[in-house]
Amino acid sequence: MAVDSNVAPVIIKRKKVSGGDGHHGGAWKVAYADFVTAMMAFFLLMWLLNATTEKQRKGLADYFSPTIAVSRMSGGGDGTLGGESVFTEAVLPRVGTGATSLNPMAQNRARGSSDPGQARETGKAEEAGASDEDLKALEDLLMGRGGETMIDDNLMRHIATRVTDEGLVVELFETEDARLFDETGAPMPLLRDLAGVIARVSRLVTNPLAVEGHTTAFPIVLARDPSWDVSTRRADDFRQLLLAGGLDRKRIDRVTAHADREPSQSNPMDARNNRLEVIFLRKG
Image (cartoon, rainbow, N blue to C red; front, side, top):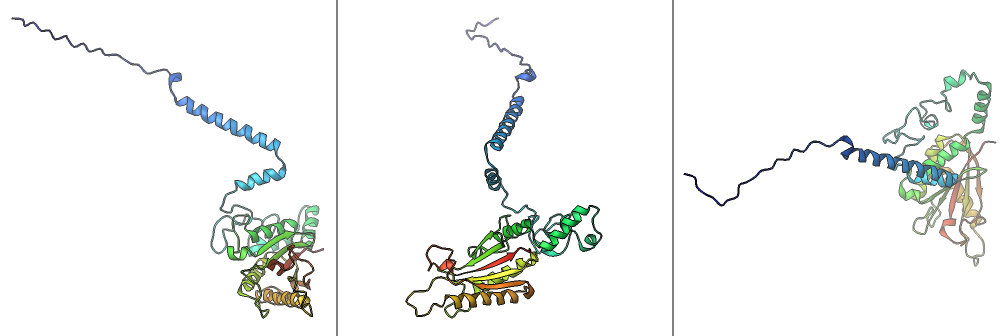
């Protein structure tokens, strides 16, 4: 016997969904976005190269330089040789090992060159001592511009360098809170540390050195101006410190006193005018 029911029947509708064609997917959008980004970066680079000067481009390159040293002076490592590689042009003058086309080993140099012009240029370079590039590399090493330096921060703030027609000038100056000489005129530990640094880096080149002493102006109420005597004594004391650090005495070309005649600061009594200058002279 059938039973009547008011409940509506349940109807299940099954819809078959097939996979879309390839062009309906989203993977191509990722690849296209990467392509557009790369093209935008490329055209931006072209625009920068066309719209900037050489100095500005160098500034941009320096901004994006890695913090770990990757330069001709080092392979970026640490340890005894500081990441040296036989492929770096500065290896030979720095550690006495390795060789490159610019810095051949002694036995290879003795064999001569198949190019007479190259041989003449090599001979001139040896006679002239460190080239401009070598002096610039030495300056970069001192100031840590390649990402590493031989000097800690405490010493770094007392050093300034510049390349002139005479050679590489390394200026060692004192500040109000850090003196180079005490009240009796004896060298302070700071100056001894700086002398050790200069003696070490001087081994990277063969150029002769000049030592120059400068002082602040003394009060005019003094009966006798001691600036000449003070600058002379300080320059000679620093020469002695360099020799004690291992510098060959034959490389000292001159020791000069300038008293207070060449201040580096507008205020003649500024502590920074108490300074010593070591010049890596060009060989003429």
